[in-house]
Image (cartoon, rainbow, N blue to C red; front, side, top):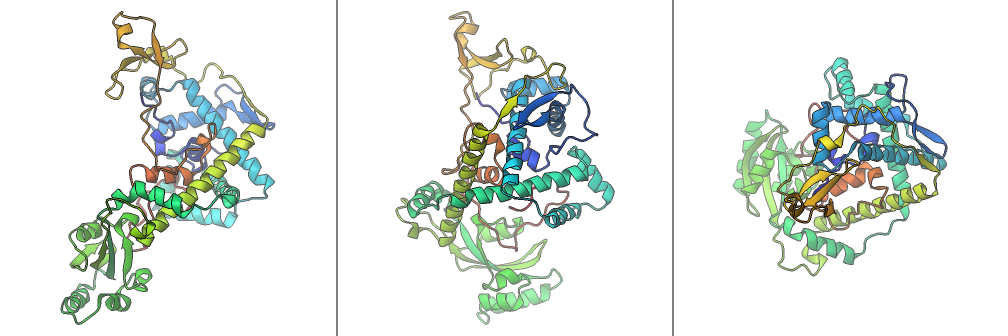
Length: 451
């Protein structure tokens, strides 16, 4: 039976990242925070985490997931092997870890640059066509602009702390890179490397003239890119955009590139960036057996090595956070009654699914999901119960560890995104400035600062 992470169900990031990235209002409790039950959920080295702050975070997540209806909420909890108690536990632990990060950053003298915070907020505000639209976007994720700034500050501080903690992480060896490359080599098969010449949309006549000269052998492609391309970054390298598997290329570009063999030149290709002339400069054919890094293009080697570096740094951060947890004075109080997200899980038995056809899911006296043997349900061997299994989680790439138990929900955004990017695919590399996709319109203020 598969358990869907409360965090992944929302944004494929950890609960601490949900807080740090502003997906829900996880900043300090303010006078605007509703009063639910009052009291203290936990203390971390004497710092109190209010119960109402935890409750509001859960309520915000419910709103984000359109689960404000009690019946819908109860069904979702049952389907994903959750209870109100376990949801509270995850959120409380995320706040505990968040507080440990704050305290660790203070001890290291790490602070957020206010100018950087201002720049990031202004950039995000620029995605909206009015102050009203910006305010509505903030309201949609349950926070004020001041709270959003606090979340950005915490994210920046967390990134700096991770970098400092990860400074001593071991560099991957060539042997480790090779072992990871064996995992990815098949997904690189058929990858294409390309160059392009970019013209303004209004320069079709000039683009056609240049294309005709290239096809006639009168003009070298790389020379033409250096002379005519509006993409100055790639023009300096003869138009080189890199490998399609390592770049986020616009659809029109990838569609045209797919029809090209090595050495072929496209016709005029129009995208939101303008008019492209594309040349396929290389095609990678994966070897049946990878025995040496020399069998891979250097760009693929660099991408895998960078992923392993990030993984090692993340693991160092997880270990540091677990050490902080073990050394801290942490008191977590019992869950109070009367919480708005509480439901009686006895009313929401989990139905048998195709993923778990060996038994029927029910709940125990505490509302925790359990799996009953089919024979017990039919009266044969009644009373024999098996605990729900967590098997079925989608695999992450080799070398990406979810971290120490108790700290996985405190992963920073970089680690979670690395794991998410690696699921079922080759590690992503840095894409070229052009012709990669631009910023998405209507982007929510939950986006994280560039890492």
